[in-house]
Image (cartoon, rainbow, N blue to C red; front, side, top):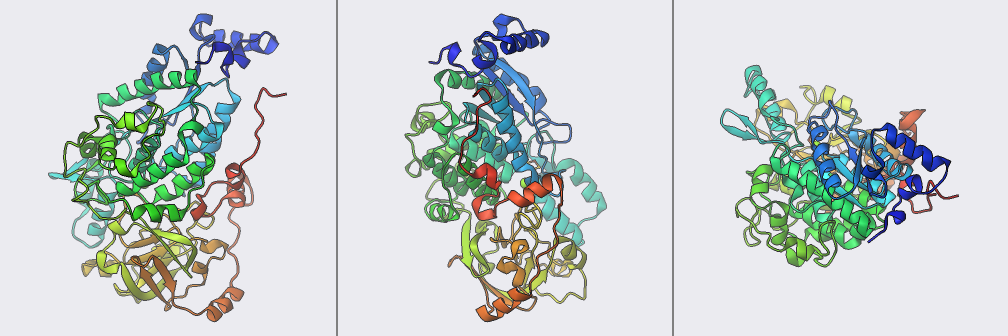
Length: 573
Ligand code: FES
Ligand code: MG
């Protein structure tokens, strides 16, 4: 148990001197009595609430529950508003800003009198950003997942945010529904605060956080507006004070074993492909080397058990929660987990999972009746993606998993949007749609363009899937035979830059390969003719981003943030 003088905040408050006098005087100015805070663990509540972020709009209130827990445990909570990354509104993509929030998180925790942190977020990139920054700061911390929104409803049907938006948009383009239906859908798709309630990127990443052991047990699937979410937030506040007293830092939780279990979890959930990039980046901050090959290796051992859309057929996160949530899911695969590692709540994961069970075998399937016999993501290699590419093959049309087709190439997203429905564009359902300049630098930020729209004349013929290839990402709520995250990306001269319309491309998911059927001599000739695209940012954050961003296979962190090295403590001389 750490004594008050051993707390980090003691340097700000506890010693004698002009500076500490000033810190105490300014805390009086905040309205606190000495006995309310002196000698107590200071807990930073990092809140990504914002009026613009519907996934986090309830977190303004929820922070009060966190503070309640901190006070009751004898800590002193201070709320810090931090950047909000709204998947819906932020352009070109919040992925451009994940590392900015990670930097903000790390530097706030370092530069203020903070002993521990509660991290509040959940919309896609918020989870990895907060955890990357907190891992680098390496204080005791608990993550409070924002929780999924309630299921959508329309004309007696249950809707998944994202997933059904794509589906009905295609139906509208195919002329199957009209403006009136679309207006109703507008009010039915997302009907409460909270993050997307499919097994999209948000649910996948918050589940990964729970599997890593940085949340209260069972936290990740609690619906955002359920009273249980308040109780979980209070429990997080209680927990973090205890962690500070025990000095149990994130580095003790975020071990190689924990990351392997998080990989097992996201694959067994049939989760979002975005988790591949984010887990690699998060592991990097914790000093753990995680690679694409780890995902492919684990995928072959873990079945998909979560029958949650879009990977599964039927259910949404609320169903998953009441079927047992993540503890229930993990209780089905104890043999695939490292049960002796600590979490923020227990000395071992084994202890944490004691008593966990599944209440609905159709939502969380038993091992002998999985949704898919192998994990949801496959890693591809080949001359088109020397450093790898990924495909969520369980969300793809089975007949396309082995396919050779003629490439139809779009140089960028705008060109693709302008020409995809052009009747003059010669294209059949057997062709392979190729989009480039949509990667980490080229997008920039790897926008979620990867589920390229199908030409509307093919949609009208009933075509619902084609092979699509890009260096972009894809929303976790999307589906289709989409090869993503091609590395290196075309913007930096990866082989994707050399593909021409009319070339043939072979996708072989069982063989884990992606091949451009053009010989090396011809590729070398094309490379000699290639000129790099123009620079996108000459100043500002974009210029820093362009200079520092790493490729998809290494997690798209900034090189200067990912590398190990000394960082001076603010109170070091
Ligand atoms: Fe925030 Fe989907 S838009 S999680
Ligand atoms: Mg998303």
